[in-house]
Length: 466
Image (cartoon, rainbow, N blue to C red; front, side, top):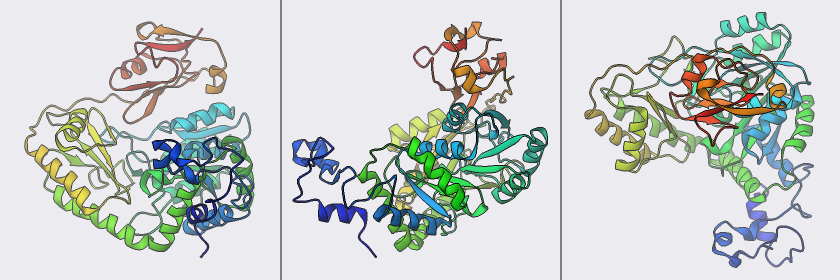
């Protein structure tokens, strides 16, 4: 096996005089942060180290390794996170003016892709999971209804697994879309570990989607901002490569690419035992938390009517019907037990696990939850409002190009929204540019932490078209 990119950098760079970028000149002793971040290995595209946008050597070999691991026709390194892959993938699979079917709870990058590519969105609204701040699986019946209502759709974008680990029946959904002549892009940012064995469910690439996007850093041992994009055919791969040239930086970090390369080699050489250790840690957690009295862990068994499957690596806890909120559980674990969760909401708290977790880390979380659970009492259920289905006056791209102004939310009803307004959790937009603001949507904006893209420094206001 050839040297890893990290080994190649460490072996060949010492003694060479860098009369090129970056400006620190690999002088790691120039400042403590440069030494800690291994600036001595930080280079630009120089002879012998390949080029991300025209790979012929070690980077090409690494991307071929990724394709073999996940079973893709072609795979590509992402150094701009899954966002770069989603934007490039949407551009590769559509033309301006196309209609795209997408879950309302899609990541913001999918919405940005809609606007940048001049697409018209049509939304899929899965049911809410009772007692959890989450939305269920996309069902084949839901997709069939959408396909019948939008026969002119050209792309289906699915999020699987979702942020909370909820899975949909991807093989059936992809087949339905392909039978209708529609291409499929799967945002599997949270599912890079799926389909690689170790007792985890099947992954998105094996389901036949045209493009699948993975974030390596979310669950696997790679640095933040690293990911992969996979193409099902050579033709799709060529189109994707062309768009990645547009959406990825022309100065990719070799440290990030060394992280990707190292992660792929680790999976190839030691994947089975590492997955087994992770899965055993999850099983130990499940055993220790089986006796929780008040807190509930989201599983397909307790939400089988709306959840097709779950990634066992996501631990979503419901506080519904107790005297504690998800926010309070999050703060208690942080301040009393030194445990930092991924997210919290009115009724839930979310813990993400990854390959770096062990039985010790998960048993520590389990012990804290058991202790908290003992002190909880039953309480009335907290109501979580339903997701509005607003009227679209124009496409997001059209709305974002028009003049706008900030107005108080109390005066915004009936106006056309000029920004994205997303309530967390579960991160589903209550309003999208080009939609008419309803009383229901405006009420929902006061129910939890709100992300807005234009009125972010004026939380009592919202951007509307002039």
